[in-house]
Length: 71
Image (cartoon, rainbow, N blue to C red):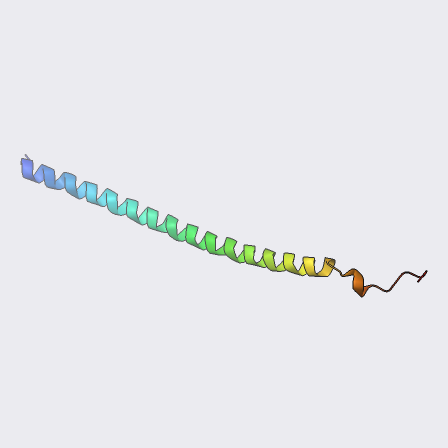
């Protein structure tokens, strides 16, 4: 029969094993989220760049256009 000390030690070992498993799972989750966040940041920067290009292409200055034919 296990002594009280052995029983407590066994319970602590089980708890530590559970905690280690949980930490590993959380670490993997955080790493995956970090990769996803980096991906979304790159996409966001690319979209900003494309938007700036579109704005530049669509913007025009009326002074750059030739005068109407009746002038």
